[in-house]
Length: 268
Image (cartoon, rainbow, N blue to C red; front, side, top):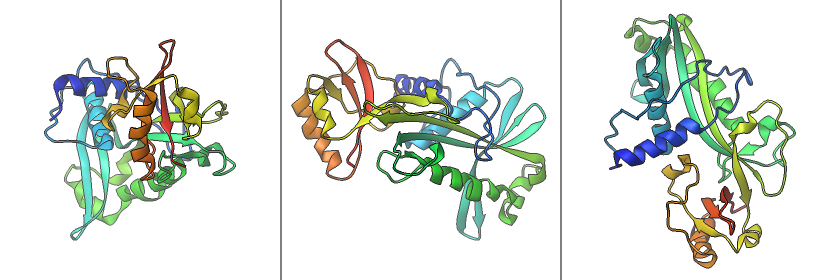
C-alpha cells in the first residue's frame, strides 16, 4: 500500500496541474470554482488505485475544503437491470447550486497530422485515445446519462431531479509538444504544457543526459533530482522493452548542466 508521504507528493503534483480550458469549450463548461489544495491529503486509500481514480480522490479532497460546498455523492453507477450504463463522477453542491461534475486527468501529445483544428490534434501517448474522443464521450455519453430513465431513481434517492442539476467538467491535462517545434494555442490552456516528446532516433540527441523511468502514478509529479539516474545505454535497454510493445514511456532527463526535463519517448 502507498505511504502517506508518497500520496502527499502525488497529491501536490495533481494540484499543480492546470485545467485544459478556462472558459466554455465545445459546449463543455469548466467548474468555475477555484479549488485550492488542502494542506494535506486526508482521505483513506485502502487499495491500489489507477491514475484516473486517484485523480478523482484528489479532487474530492479539494472539494471537501470548500466552505460553501460539499459532496452529495461520489461515483454513482447507473445501471439497467444488471448492466452498468456508466457512472456519474460526483454530485456536489456549491452554495445553492447542484452540479454533476465529471473529473478528467489526461496526458496528450500534439500531432498536427490528425486534423485541421487544435481540438483534433491532441492524442494520447500510445495513440489509443484523443482529446476529440474524450470530449465526444463526455458530450454524447457521460453528460446525457444524467437525463436517462435509469438515472431517475438514483437521483430520487438523493432527493434530486435532473432538471435542477447543472453539468460541469474539471478537465486537467499535461500536454507535450514535438521536440524543437512550437505549437499555437487558441482555445486550450498553454500553461498545461509540461514538456516535449521524441522518437527513438531523436533520443540520440540526449546521449549525454541521465534518465529515469517513473512509474505510472509518478506521472503526476514534477521532475525532481531525488532519484537514482540511469546512464544512456542502460536507459535505452529499459526503454526498448516499452517501445517493442507499442508503449510510449514518460521519462525524466537530467542534462549536463543539471536542468531537469520531462518528456515522452514515443514508439510511433
